[in-house]
Image (cartoon, rainbow, N blue to C red; front, side, top):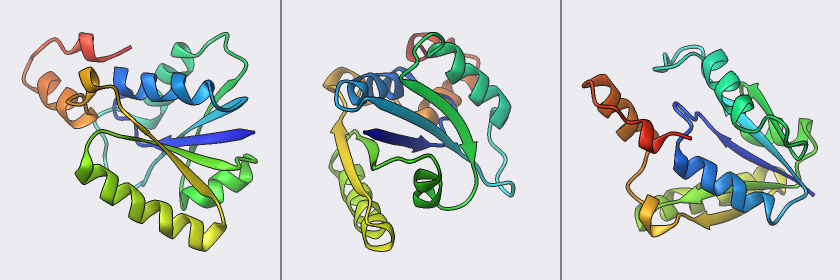
Length: 144
């Protein structure tokens, strides 16, 4: 089965990598979808994010990486994904992700598999990495 792991991934962190690798233990194919909105400016361009994630998974035929606009469920259907994958770091995120999973299931029939992050990665987020980098800190230990 093809699974879609979607996000902005600005940047793609070691936490994202862990969720992707664990999803590959459950599904035969993983599409990493980089969603973007032209009205929102990210720290890294969509092309930079796409190329960085492609480099990480180079040589792994089970992983493809693409960008998309619009609803995640529409993109999932366009790539033949039968399930959505989400990572969850804490209870607050779980509530938000459950609501999203319920909406996605209602409008598309797609199920969501939520994978809890490993405890040692629970504090790693893209926004934390961006903040550290913005203030001159070497955040490379949080990036693949």
